[in-house]
Length: 70
Image (cartoon, rainbow, N blue to C red; front, side, top):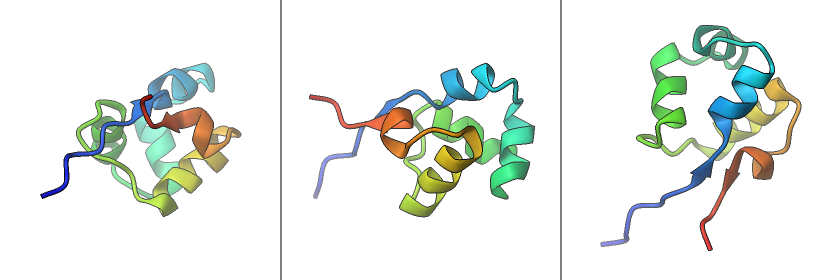
C-alpha cells in the first residue's frame, strides 16, 4: 500500500492575503467550504483540477500553493 501524500500547503496563507473567506473561495471554485477547510488543514489532497482552479482563483501557480516535501 502506498504511503499517504503529504503536501506543503500554502492555501490558507494565499486565501487570507487575497481577502477571501473559505466560503468565498469555495464559491469561486464551486466546491463546499468544508472542502476548502479540509484542503487547508491537510486532511484532503486536492485533485489536479481543483488545485488548478484554486491557483487560478488566487492568481498564483499550483506550485505556489502546494509543494512536495524534500
